[in-house]
Length: 294
Ligand SMILES: Nc1nc2c(ncn2[C@@H]2O[C@H](COP(=O)(O)OP(=O)(O)OP(=O)(O)O)[C@@H](O)[C@H]2O)c(=O)[nH]1
Ligand SMILES: [Mg+2]
Image 1 (cartoon, rainbow, N blue to C red):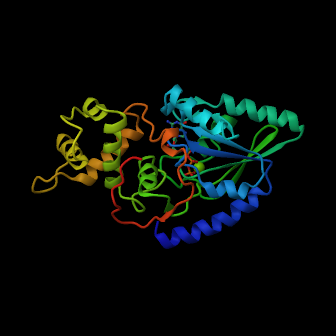
Image 2 (cartoon, helix red, strand yellow; image 1 turned 90 degrees about the vertical axis):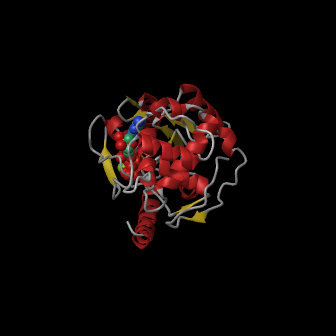
Image 3 (tube, rainbow, N blue to C red; image 1 turned 45 degrees about the vertical axis):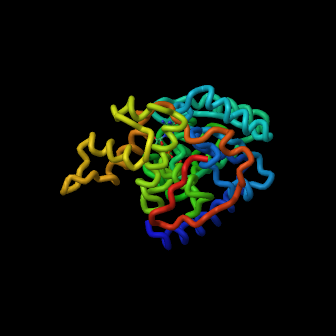
């Protein structure tokens, strides 16, 4: 995915999405419950205007119930309708299902619903779980869904849309989180930078996680040293005996994604309360400055 291609692709996608948005009764905005703030695409809010809109905290199986409730309350306090679901290995879409059924009942005619959000948050998986079949293509990479697709259910039709992503970010911290959650790939943000941030973040908020998961001797100190120790332990060496830090970084990110670090979330409401909403940088490939949490 080159940057030029991405730009043109996104511009086309944007036009399509806005056209679709005008055709639906309801927008389901899917975010990742591990970083609901950072996985939200604010332009979607802008285009939605006063279209009815629900915020869906996805992958709820990957967070603790108290963390989920904190985020739910955070957005409810801002007047949003918030629902949570899981549609991965463990599936629980009952809350969304019930709310949609109620919507169909109230309306008394078929409901047209658009499911949107940034890549890889579980939009297609949600649709499949709601309709109880494998209609929408899904997968572990961002960008699985290529074009918008209507999927017909009973009394409802759901529009699966490709992940919306503009190659820009609000800060290096934002990019680290998107990279760790696999919403963006290595071509937009290097795994190593994101992994170094994750090491720092874990030491602060989830101390001893890496020690317990991988038997590392220390996790304070320089994140580079921690990543090196991890790589050495896993035998990820380059010729000459240096640690292959890129591989160690990819390994750590994968471990996070596979749940081997536990129910770790990447941000709590206190991190973002009062944060500037739309300060964005351009998502240029290359080595970013290292941003600590906060
Ligand atoms: N643990 C967990 N994994 C999930 C959940 N929902 C989806 N996944 C996984 O997340 C990955 C992305 O799921 P998709 O449904 O393809 O996501 P998407 O938002 O449609 O992605 P794009 O079409 O690429 O924008 C897949 O590997 C899913 O198995 C969930 O609730 N919990
Ligand atoms: Mg999809």
